[in-house]
Amino acid sequence: MNEERMKISQDILSDGFGLIAASGYINNEGGQAIADAANKLMDQGCKTLLIDLDGTRIINSIGVSILLEILEKLMDEKGQLAFCNLTPTISKTFEIMGLVQYASVYPDRETAQAAIAGDASV
Amino acid sequence: MPLSDLLRLADVALSGHAGPDLPEEILRVVVEETGSRAGVLKKGDEAIARWPRTVSAQVEEATEGWSEIPFGGGEGQWCLRLLHLDRLDESVLDATRISLRAWQLREELKRSRFDERFHLWELEAIRSIATGIGGILDTETLAEELISHLVALLGVRSAHLYLGDSPQSASVVGSFGPTRLEENELEPAWRQGIYNDDLVALPLQTDAGTLGVLVASDKEARAGTEPFAANDVRLLELFAVQVTVAMEYVRLTRESLERERLKRELEMAAVIQSHLHPQQFPDLQGYRLAVRSSSSRQVAGDTYDVLIRDDALIATVTDVSGKGVGAGMIASGVHAGVRLMVTGSRDLSEVAGRINSYLAGATADNRFATFAMVSIDPDGRLRAVNAGHLPVLIRRRDGTIEEINSSGLPLGILAVASYSESVARIEPGELVALFTDGLTEAEDSDEEEFGVERVAEVTAGLAEPSAERLCDAILEAVEAFTDGATLHDDATLLVVERLANDS
Image: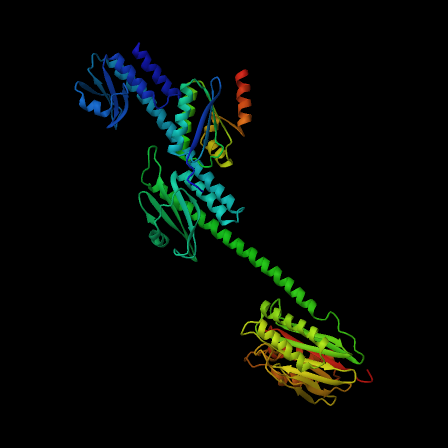
């Protein structure tokens, strides 16, 4: 198992809809990198964020707390947060830690984009 | 309307939607309402918020004109520091206190809920590991699974699992992050563990000794790292127990599978060996045979064979030193050698010599086989060769016993050995008995051996002699002698009977 340093990219997929692709260990550094990307997208007007965790296998409690802060911030802005490509272990962790109570989880990026686009059109 | 602004912020705090920036927002309103130039909100010695954000600790230190206003909050009291304060309304302080208290309660509630969920996460991880133990038999896969749970739950930057028979032979079977345990630290970790602020290494201990070391290092804090706390060590100890159980399970399951595989192979070898023995004796007019053979293990070191070559009946008995599969393989080799070589030669001493040469080159130094072979023509002419084996007994019609003794070393001891052929005649009603030392070395309760003499006595004293009756009589005598105790060695008894003319 390697150190799994966080690799991150961000993109605006459509008006108000931002994507963050993050792979690696979500610890304090990895989590902060995701938070920085989320803040940047929010500053650019994104109120809906999809975080694609393809390639992420491990998240620790600090990483979870940072994702919870991103969720709170988005909820303050009446936005929404979604995740996709979660491993079964991370999915279970999100469920236990209450993240999926307010954030959506999708199996893959295509399904997430289609669902979020569908929500937006309603 | 600053008061209403502050109360709105209190409402936000209580609603649960307030983030970590709320104290800064409250401070901003207070600074504006009191006509101050800047403000710092402190709880105890810690600055919770600064407004404007450019007011760093250094700026605060270097500037004069600060008013310090404590406003309650119990232990770790809240304090407002306002620069060039213009006016202060008591109601603003009250509203500030209410807002901050609401925010603080909300934060404590969130933290408490987070901790509660984190404990559930711990339980789930332990459950997941316990469940996974039953399904993963590959040590490295299991180690990676355990390490990833450990890294996640403990919030460390690196973790390693060492397994081995000793610190010197131990190797890393699961890892995350850079190795932090120095080579010379493995031995103390193995013996009593290492408990440092930035590294904890725990030995994995079983009743049979230490089987490895679990190492975790660099416990993360929100910013950077922090020393391991007692709770972290407790959690790591719990993991160490889980890892120990998991690895022991893998080892025991593998051993069990290996035992099962060996058992099946032994069963197969026993079946193969049993098929080497004649399934039914060849028919030679005027002769009848009987055999009894038992092995102390699944695969026997004894073997026997009966075949017809050039109208002669050939009977052999072989006893390989030692027991089990190794002995069985050599016995099978002798069996095959006899079958092949008696086809090309009628000279039994030559056959024995060639099998001896083959065995001497093909077996380990300490392995050998005793071997007896008789060839009986239809007219009763008997030729025999005995290579280090017990005597072959001939029972005459009048009950007297003749012995054909060994004429050379057991097979396989020396590369070149010579054997001489013995010659005799078997008349109708007479018996030839070949047997192995499993019978003669059977012991009674005083550890006295049954011996060749008793075999000869039973043979001599047999009423109405026949091959079957002699087999039964010898085995009954051995059983009576040992009081029914199990034989400790392979035992074989092969009897050739020349039928009496009136049979």
